[in-house]
Image (cartoon, rainbow, N blue to C red; front, side, top):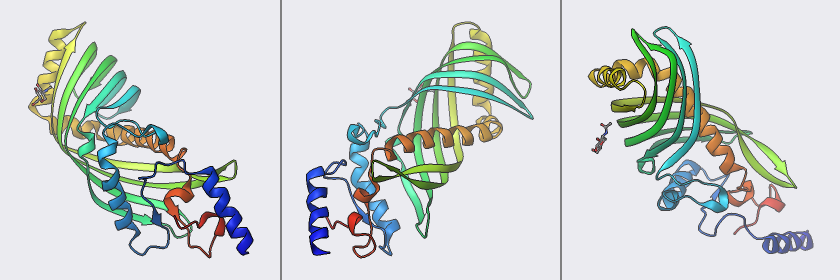
Length: 256
Ligand SMILES: *[C@@H]1O[C@H](CO)[C@@H](O)[C@H](O)[C@H]1NC(C)=O
């Protein structure tokens, strides 16, 4: 047993860590694991602005999403749009209000975040769409400021194994996004007057429009979050960040 342990330690050391040295670790059996993870997030925060390429964490300032295709029909809304070159500023100022992990035979988490301010810009192309009585057709640039944002995300992950190393992959993620206030402007290349009245319509009662868009925002946020998480999780060997108890699993139990 001793020989085996020494061997695995040697092996682990020569293979080295994938994650950077400053990467925090938490013990799976830690009764205060929620606190440990929240502290880990704070340790990482300054580096999140520019991203951490070693583990595929993209820059949060600005946070970029190349393309979103939206296609949704519901009462009061018919939306067909392609939104490109989305850039959001302010994402790194997120506050973790609450975090609850459940690691009893699963990997499940619920997190509540708030974001004081998000400034978004994007290119849009909207066809044959309608919100309430407002017909929307056009192409151009949109800019928007959104404040008082709260996000509740619930998700579960499963373990996948690649070349003998275990990783987590997000399985199911649902989010609930609330936006306190918003103001938008459209620089439309095709129908500037219609775009100006659409912006006026939104800015006069952002709450009404955001309510109608809410299911779409929730789904889009969940999809973006899932893609983001899976890119990152695929690069972080589980045993490097979530330490098992020594006796439970010697090969993953390296105490460093
Ligand atoms: C967003 O806020 C910035 C800074 O306050 C301001 O310059 C910009 O015009 C605002 N954009 C919109 C669309 O209201």
